[in-house]
Image (cartoon, rainbow, N blue to C red; front, top):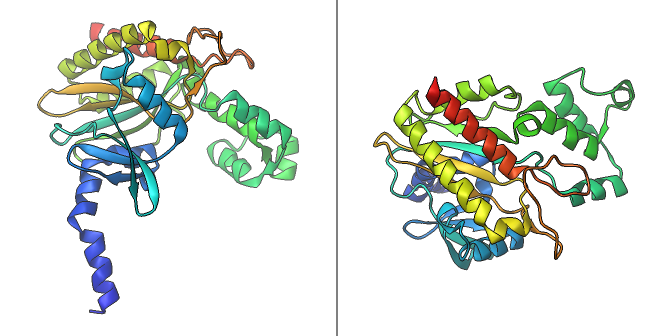
Length: 298
């Protein structure tokens, strides 16, 4: 066996890599595996992003502290800066995981403005659009075989329950290793219900635990100084449970959570109209709570 091949195999099968994949299946769900590394015992490293770092620092002294990963400062690793945070899967035995993207949009208003200021026809976005729905592009877009980024960004949100319910399921990873991220068109409440029942294996006890945790989170959000002062976009709720019945929910991903201008506050429930910066976070959580309540009442 050639030395380089031996080395490649060693790297591929090193305990760190194997255990990282086993221990952090949600990293693959979130679709940014390259941003994470295993940290010390009970910790995980995520590529540094100043927005996220500032949010985690502020959240450490907010009413939301029990619902976010603990923050342990920045560390250097292989010339890269990483945020060191709590490993949320620590203490779970073969967990099942669901990532729910919260809010009525996953882009900031600034992103929309910037894309309009520098209009650029995107062939890649047209291709993605056609792959999902060949009838989605207009005759003009079909003719140029390209779409503008703002058009694509707004169209994409209408496919899922993001615009209709204020949240969408991004991915589910079951304890048995089954992984699904095919929820782009999961739009109707009954489709969401089906996906959640499947996720919890129809276990009402786990569903009841999740509902209690979501209601506690909603109370904390309504009292949170952090929420009052921030536009929360592209953030997820991470649902984790295992066969012992342990079930928890956390807020994760604050890369696009930005402070509001002084004196401005959001309801996080009013419909978004460009310029008002409303993100629909609490509206989405209200809908999620209502769906779980209905599931348990039936």
